Image (cartoon, rainbow, N blue to C red; front, top):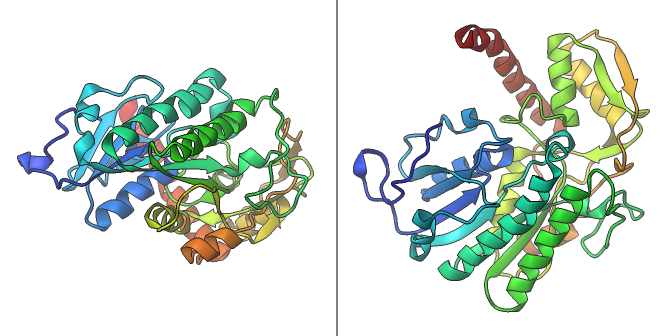
Length: 345
């Protein structure tokens, strides 16, 4: 993925529309789907990503599309002058920039914290200068290992502020505080989405999340890894539903001064998810159990009453349908690995 800095023009020198979406983290899993959805809606997109944990391949289908630009940049650093000069054209800023899986965000915890806090502040200042609406993708991790079930937005959480996940959990909590402070001060129109577990095509096969782990292990014939006894629960939302929720929240005629849970309220155990993956892939690989990671939540399920009421939004894709599409995508990705390795060698 090459760095592009001539941000005022698209392919073949065509002038871009005046309205512009800035999508930070746009090369990531959810971010790449959001970029595609915005382009399909006829909007202009500037994807901002440092590619530290994102996959450049997620953007290959978008390169060369009218209205799409890419700029390689780390939002924890001051924003480039080329971008700040574009403030009069920017109407929407979407902040999806941060590694979201524990192995990745724990790899460089200082950078994770700075991305969430300093990076969010940089984007909020841009939103203030541009008079643009700003959406922060926060996370269900702000609830920690919850003592209230399901989790509604008024629950303040049970987060370990000193544990190995704190760089992400507390970083997102601080990012929310910044966003709401900007909103209260009238400095920016803000929206905060608390995203629960999401899955689908464009996930990184090696990101360490439970869906990608189990599907890739099953397709490769490797041992199937379950952490703990498998009784911990999650609620899985297909990526197209998540993107629809984010877009609905960004465009909603609300004051934005309250977070909104986005996720699938259908709760299941990890063991139940494993059963679905085994059925879809036909694997006969053995299951191995590993110790549960420190501070790993025992139960997670969103209360989406607020999203239903404010956005008229709820997930539509059944798990069986979403997992089938995700398995097919991963099968194609894994089949291409030997060829890619041969080219690299």
